[in-house]
Image: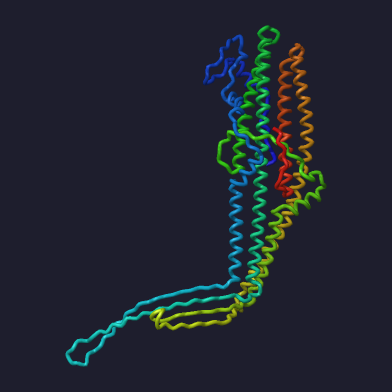
Length: 479
């Protein structure tokens, strides 16, 4: 997300020049066009899309600051809500593990009704055989309790592992927050970039329109050839195209900012310009910055806690060879009626459970747990290397963009002076329109380059803050 495309490029296109030469009339519009004549082709009508971009600032009533964008992301970004849900689930698993330390009590009850028929043979000759029916009622109920006494660390190991995993998930949630803020800041600076580039495009179009009027006047009095007019009309058309593209890039950048904030709303707002202050220690040596990052970054802390959790899991798995000791108790009530004539009995004792042979299951599980531990340790080493690379890249980008901004500022000053001189030479009759057009293109590109360098530096510092594990970013409102 470091690269922000330049959307302005003014060049003289022969195909456009040909089209202008073949069709000097004003482009069609949905509104009545001002009166024009063949002798005054400079008074062409601005296309509706360009008119819209020229008045866009007036329609943008809301102003969003960087703090507003970050606050919206904290509240609405789905990735943050998902990370929070995962953290809540992890701590719920901690409570599940702790439940094994507490007594396990269960109860059951049943009541059955039954009927049995039995034939009875009468002793009196000639009498019918009788049938005797018997009904039965039976109630049974019991309460059983089991309390773990000792299992050689299996239950405590699972509990410790679940706590470390929950802590790791909480650290991962913090990393998700930092990534979300980095994305918001990058998108915000991209909006500022496109906004400034739109201003450059608008200024360029205004300059080209003013110059077109001047050239047209010179052509009318015969002091300049007609080809100058065609050249300038081409330059103006190219400026209109660049403005339309800049307008589209600006609207697209705001839509991307909405996505990073996690909001679904209109983009009828503008953003407040900001200047990002230098990151504390951004000029320190690399090893010092890497040490800061390893101590502060939540993804590094999460990996450490995952390793601790897996180490506990290895101990739990090895303890599968050992027995478990628990206390048991049972209270039962059996009879025809639970309140009358029932037999109440109680039992209690100590129970030792020991799986003497499981076909090598525990050994296989232990090998798997150790392999998972080695995997996490390798991931930790890879993460340390990745952190070092990210810090070094971010630091180098900050240095490079600072120097590029200085050079871009100088280039813009020189390009502005070149344009001023070219326009003066043209008015004096010693220059030509090609020289002026080239100077205008150079100045526009230099201005766009200066804009790009300005917000590249802001983005680079935001990236360095993320690489160092710093949530806060010091900014100053500048517009």
